[in-house]
Length: 149
Image (cartoon, rainbow, N blue to C red):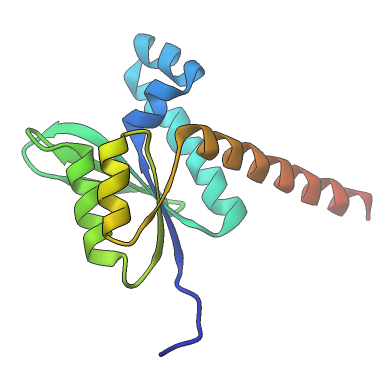
């Protein structure tokens, strides 16, 4: 057995976050793509600031599950028509929980129970918002210290 820690992965239920965060919910009412883009941007900064690999999953409308890997490395999945983001998240967790330290961010309590049964941890939308804010603050502090040198 290896003493190496498992790589950390954060899987985010995209629409759960959008509809729980007031600023993104308001933006989504006007422009869904802009709300998704703002969430992806915040999650990309989080990945860059923490080294945690981030995957965000949105409910989609296509004929198959699709994946877009942003140039900077965050993975964005869209479920296929008739499939929920939850089912994509569950499949990913069931497949990779033994290899990775996975945390799923969702406010769906059934989803929480399911991913925990597969070995992943769970985080609420409020906790994720706090973690994103803290990571941004830590980066700003590091930049400030570098500038003062």
